[in-house]
Amino acid sequence: MALENVKKGQELFNTVGCVNCHSLDNKKLYGPALKYTMGKQVTVLRDSTELSVTVDRDYIKRAISNPNFEKRIAFKNSTMAKTTLTPLEIDLITEYLIAASDENALTN
Image 1: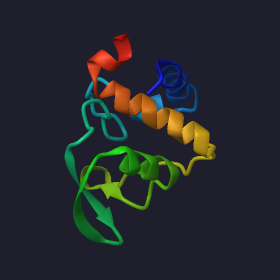
Image 2: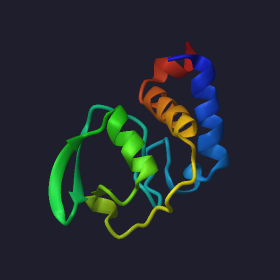
Image 3: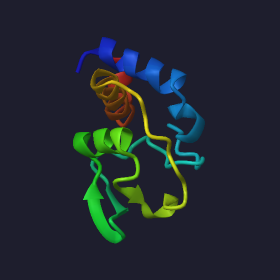
Image 4: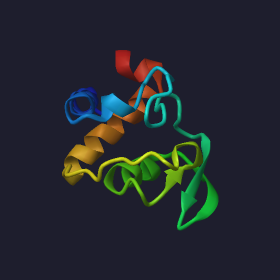
């Protein structure tokens, strides 16, 4: 992962509004906190069925591109606006969120 892409993803996270609902310091806001979530199991609702899924690159990309496909149980009543981000922008934000789960990735 190139640090340049992580920085571009961080800029997008802040400018397109993600930061308004999602914290990276584990504070609960309107949406789930996103720091240190990589590799963790979360319970989601998909088609009214509870499932346990692992937060990975694919999960993050799905959550950004189609936020209502799987909703974390704790936030089932929260609604995230469907994004108008390009696939590249989604990839960049995903890289940033992955890096945010690893303190060293943002400083090296």
